[in-house]
Image (cartoon, rainbow, N blue to C red; front, side, top):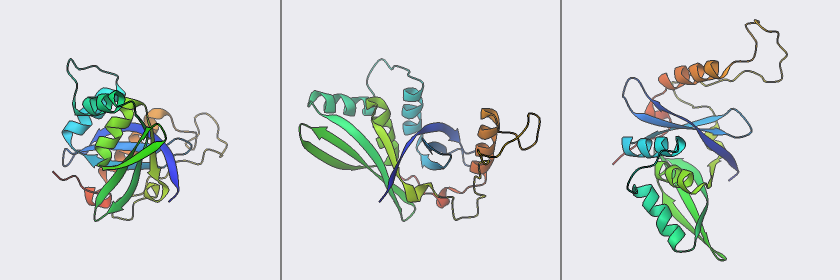
Length: 181
């Protein structure tokens, strides 16, 4: 399995179902991985991305504090696979020379990674365009020369955000995985 480093590109609420989606984007490219998550995890991720403090530790804060208290660290998390419409992830914890791999939901893994400043990786196969009824997100060719005002000019951040929003609106949660409690 080849893994690709990613970052949290944003949080979106899918308009039709009001489900929360965390969008991971590869660092050295434009491919994205949207993952449907629960509202609690969305709140935790949003709070961490915006560097907001809560007066009391939330679950992900508690996990990070326990790991730190055990003199260990979260080395990385990896979104490993999509199986039966559900994403799987692993949290890798290092202590001295030992490495522990823990099975976890991607949403929890991302929240813990953000809290501990660990690297987020994704199995490269998951970054491919969806094979469902949705329209693939096709970014512009960054090497194509354009002139200002040209309709083919490089998109702004707002253009990228709008294209991503339109792309996500056309997806069904089943195209990528499902959230279940």
